[in-house]
Image (cartoon, rainbow, N blue to C red; front, side, top):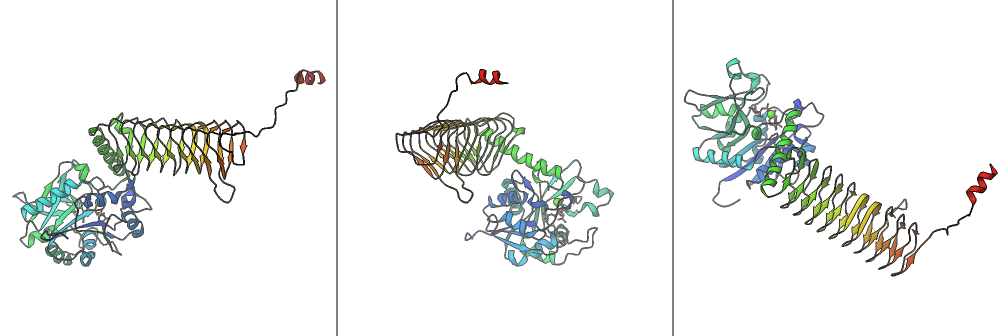
Length: 463
Ligand code: UD1
Ligand code: CA
């Protein structure tokens, strides 16, 4: 904790099931832009560099803990989910009641930006409120807690949809589930909550009324970008939240000089990086923490997962690459498949229907057609002919194939590993290589061809 600065603790409410998704799985671990929904809230919180981030977990706690592992500092277990107020109260020991600021955020806000949290904190500080919250205005506020303001325009209380009367249901300003509070003022109020409402729950939102009853101040930050601060409750909202994150990422990359032909049909993980003057065609998926260099072209139908590329790389249509590295000027595809551990050094090329696994293809080497290269270390300047297969698995263990620099492998070769081919050696087409090939040698293992002159005519004459 920085000396002199009041303590900032973030509390993520992540114990509730979320029934409107109609899923066996807790809402908060459903995927938004490739990551569990709740992790985006944690990332937004981390951007504030708070002193601590605590998450309240309960329903399917193990799944939520696993999702948030490494993103939050500690967890509190809310065994029975008796409402948002009860959830915060459960965390009292963990959070503490020393002076400072407690930022409470619902876990179902994947689109929430750090700037909005910062804005709330600054309103909270400026107004010296005991409790501050984010609101937004919706054309249809069905399902949300409504903000009731008094005749002077100040927030008076929050009424949950299920408890609201006709007039209150007509209100369009809603509570977003993002609060800043003074823990010393909040916890005594929460201890007095009563579940006398339509859902029989302890509502965190009742603390608003409680704060005002104590003549303390409640401040509201009216946020105009509603989609950013709306909780995801339905599958339709789940899809929309993903589209928002991907759209934001595409716009950010466009600002940085990346060409994205159709952002509505491009899915780039917000954590991935793409370099300047790279062109991304429609129907490309870039997942995980992939890093694409500058001046690359990625064609349609390609999926990159945790792939790192150099500059000037071309990936043609319909390639699937995972946990792989591509050097400057490398070319891949169309229709290539890289499994974990594929490495293309600079200017190496892989063509159609080629699969690589734990294989390094040296500088300028080529495997242009129909090959499986697994557990292989291939030197620079090699040519791997069409239909080459590394027989790396003997049914029990995997074995390595090693090719020196400048090796030429003829088409339809099988390399039965473990095996080594020395520098500059040639392997004749159709060879099954079972023994090491010395540098500069030609290896060939074929049955000598027999031509039976006039054989066709003789057969016809017989029948
Ligand atoms: C809550 C607010 C409502 C607001 C809405 C915004 C209350 C009483 N109401 O309603 O005013 O408009 O969010 O989306 O707070 N949770 C727990 N433990 C529980 C219950 C919930 O950790 O016992 C967590 C959930 O996992 C979720 C968050 O709290 O992340 C909000 O819960 P949810 O049930 O979605 O609240 P709403 O009824 O939507
Ligand atoms: Ca909700």
